[in-house]
Length: 537
Image (cartoon, rainbow, N blue to C red; front, side, top):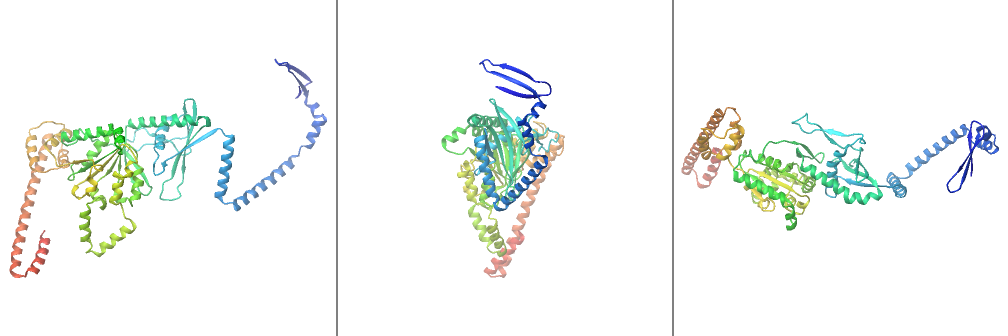
């Protein structure tokens, strides 16, 4: 084989002989001799000029713009996108060695737990190849805390697993409806021959890592639902309440802790008996008895996030299902003052009597009809369906807590086992609860005034919130305890004065009734007596 290569000097040749016996001869000829060669000269003459090339380029650009305009006008956008996608899929399937996994934030009707695991896992894999990063801190109590990393949209994160190079990208798609949030999805690119390994090993590795991170999380979040954006918004939850600081009886505290521990350990048991892995608690009692504080203590003990739901803002049962299915596992769903949140939770017999009384007011009836027409709200059936129905299985390791001041107002169907498994009465302060409050607020375990205060507490009903308010007034234990004693004595005097006032009113009513008996007939007597009794009351 002979090869001519142009050089600037005289002719040279190099002979190369390979091991298999082939010989290559390289001839280095001057450029001038090549140009003067007849074939090369004809080639240069046939080569078009620069003006011809520019003219061809202008004609081609004009033609391409015309064709593109005709295609855009004649073919709808959806058809063009369909053809483009098909061509892209065709060429990528034959000429590309990459495979793409797409993980969306919603999977059918519930939140995609794989997406959530990736959200937790990827920020730990940010490296030099990542060009952008989101930083933020939602801890309003500690603005100097180091910010937490997040993955921005369209940013790439490269991870390595068992020698594979895996590329992640977060995408966001605008929602066509203004009241729905944008859809987000993670995109994972790998080699086609690595697809099975990614499916069987890599995703399992992500889920295990994310689970260990969530179990070791240092901060908890308190979520509230934004109905305008259709999304749960969170803030850092830092409540100092623990079971050691709760002003409740030791037996009650031990029973709650043991029940929580047993619930966490019985995942397999719930699966074997065919029940959803959840637990319902009903906290009831007078205001100021520590129901919300107990919820905070449970969250701190379990290290669970809290989802605080206000039923007044929920439009209907469908909206309720969508809201509740967007909560995560290992969380507490809290509905406070369930008796005031919605009419659906109240006793049906009580609602029937109330509706009969409301029929006398036409204006109120019209307003109620309008509400039922445009905003029916949550029904009892919809609430029960998620707590103990088929929708209750959409999630694991969840605690559902209802609080109320009036347990008797709730519908019995809401209170049965399986829905509210544990009923906890949060009553007035006891001597043991007072001692815990004194130890927490004053730092003392014994005092000369303890016996007197305990005797007063046993005779006069006082809430833990009222006791704590008096103990916080002064750092001096002596003055704080004296203030508490004065408060209890004043409350006792108020109770006695209220009883005397009620007795006077009853006597006046009896006297008026006797006077009316003498002057009026029976029918008019009943009418006037009823009106006067109401007025005096």
